[in-house]
Length: 102
Image 1 (cartoon, one colour):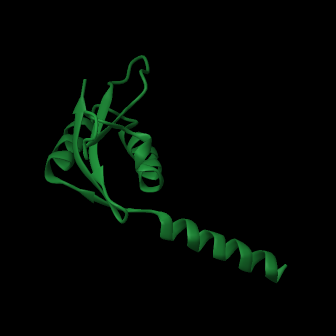
Image 2 (cartoon, one colour):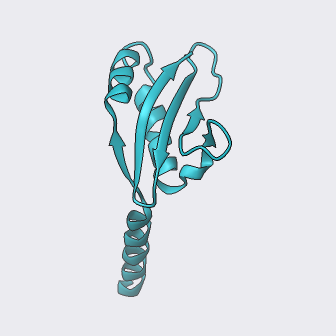
Image 3 (cartoon, helix red, strand yellow):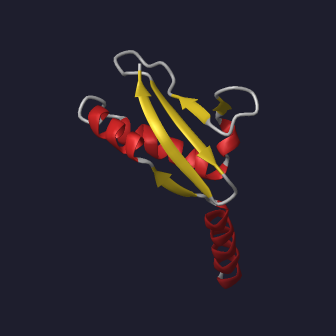
């Protein structure tokens, strides 16, 4: 049993070390505060996006070819606003630049 726990702990440390730090820029923070009261799933959506881009920021799309700024859109869900997150990243950090509600 001890070996299983050691292996799990080592794997968890590897996963955590591969996660990038999220940096929240002011326009993003302002936009999130504006939509949170109206978008009851804002926290869940953003936690999911954070989890994804911390590990695979390339999963978003560049705003234009060869751009350092990427975007990630929420899926269309009846009754909920569509949200687009704009971000950029390097090998250690992801900067959330802005959040637009459509």
